[in-house]
Length: 472
Image (cartoon, rainbow, N blue to C red; front, top):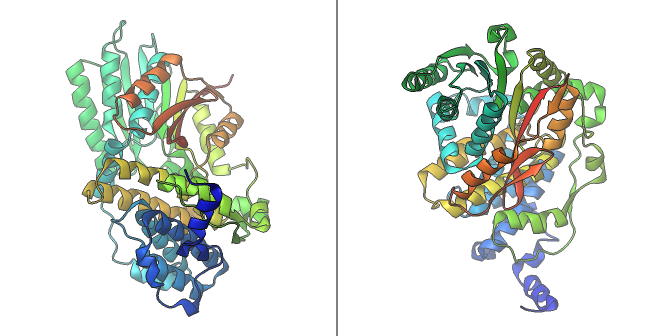
């Protein structure tokens, strides 16, 4: 291994020595010729620098500099390139969209013919289910926890807050059919905004229940979560109730911006200054490592931006009301799966840095398992991750639905709503670890945190699964 001074000399003798001093300016014109000759790691680091510089200009409203930065990024980014090129393409699109939103007429005109096909959304979420272990893990943990909690119960009612994937409940039906005391009468209430999705769910589950000879009912509720009429849940006396929420609750936080602005004017302050602190080093192999070892040490939020971060836990009327309504149903069990990352910061730069970390890990996972030309990979990256990134970066107010938060925030919030944590059993965690071991892909880990399961990739927490009951 080369001595430290030799490595430093090697790094600073490359074109990267310019990064710590250089930012896009009108005088640059077209990118320097050496940009196209950069090695993958060098190009990745420069793209990160450009993205954060661009975001800084977006936050300050410096449109001329934004345009120059976007032009340079576009020269290097590519939706079918290496990991950093791909992720840069989607963050660039998100930053550009944020700028376009300041001209509402122009933005509406450019998007006036955009059509969203529900079937495509269902397809891409199925691809996510198949390509990653996260939802499979969540379903295994949820189902096993329900089976443990419902032992001996003769009537079980499950409320599924996003009833779109029949695989979860088909597996539960099969497990219940093997119960020593026989299967219970099972009723599933499925909530989803699309009637067709619920009809497909009802058909698949009814068919499986008949095959297994399990008494079964499916109660469909066509509704968005924020508009849910709790009377339609039809919870009956004598039923043992379980609630399942997979990647849903965070969207309710979108309705509390106005409340937070009134409560804390600083929360809407948009100060996003960023500065470089040291010359880049080049000893990383994945985008996640580039971010972990370079970005945090080199870029920091300005004091103003740091002080404008929201407090560790802030009241959320819409969320509190929803959780209180769930508590009022007195469920025997509630299992919640959420993204384990803070994408709900009050400033653009906070959200950009946190989401870079999170999606870097997901893009790295695909880089290690699928070829760059894979159509399935492109669909997941563009139609799922790309749209989520755009929502986190480009949107504000009620429009910004992807407000992912860390497990500790959910623990505080659920505790305040009257729920008590139910530590996942040893056998449940063992089953989850076995599933992960059989997945055949290195890098995935599952760890226990405060009695909850946290699913990681290369030690980066990505999703959490927690179980709750009503506190007496």
